[in-house]
Image (cartoon, rainbow, N blue to C red; front, side, top):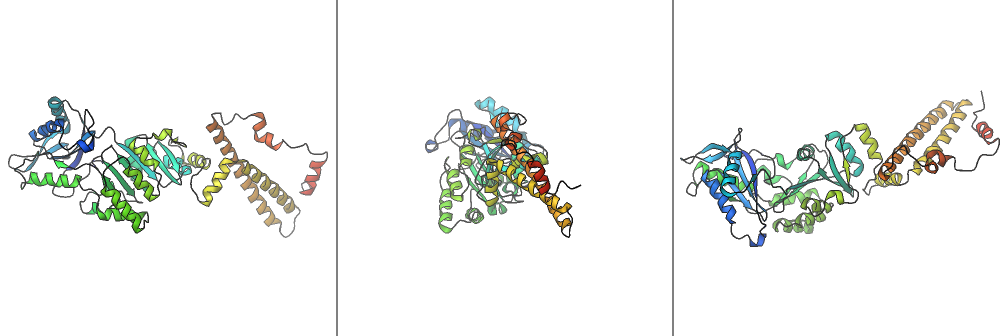
Length: 440
């Protein structure tokens, strides 16, 4: 996609970098009616051709996308008088000339471009992701997957290149769309070779790319003409059969499902194509609604914002978040988050058993050491569960909008423990004798 950062072009243009740009249309033109270039596009092409810049363009319903080549100093590649390639002006200079000639503003990328990362991490893992990556984001989880929208553009690229889990990167500007599978340690954005790019797990949809004509119509066999053809071929790479098969293999699709995926890939770039692909692959379809702009992630049920924190605090926060997966551990943690009183009851039981074993160990005997060890383990586990209970209670109060330390008198842990009937006279002494605690 043209929205990707500048990558090296591995062909005759390998000494240059890709530089994307966008010109937003004043009025929207439906794709079905865009049979002829808009007048503004013709004016723009005339300006680019006047500068003899080697470039490609693609017309969408709301914007025209451009792609240039630039050297390390940011000078754009252009056709020399003899047909060779030389460095010309900068993108800023072209933007000024375009504004003076057409009144249109050249932008580095589509202002309506949206990016979403769909990671195979459940809600309790997200605080740790924010802590380890040092990024802030808003996310919502469904069935063990999380839809993540980052606060800053650079954070999206930081996380997608460092994930150890399988993830899917989605992007859409209303005309061009992409679906990229990020396997552990592999990122399609890092593949710049034209042949190697055929093997990455990525699907793309978008308008047709054409040369702007900066190299000249008569310069087909010149170096500048070959540069322009290579650039158009790179931008218009599309999705190969091998890429479709790779995605089908990653998500274990059967032949019928693979054929459905192939039909989606060969279809038009509509605002429903990403949603259809996600549903076919068993991924949360709401990610497509977010990336297409039909739903804001902050409006979705369960959406939370995460900020970087210490790893220990992030781990503790993760324990207080209800998971959405269907596994046994997820169901167990979900039950604890919903009913933290279970932890208090379990901690009380373990405390009673630990005290009893400690009393038995103090009586001596051959198993005293074993009983003492078991008692210490039970008491330590009870202390950990009590701390977990306190964390869950604090999280519940924060979600309810109250201070964690402010608890109603009849809702405090102490009140819960003391809510039963008062013990009969002498009951404490009998319990102490039962556990052997009255021995000196």
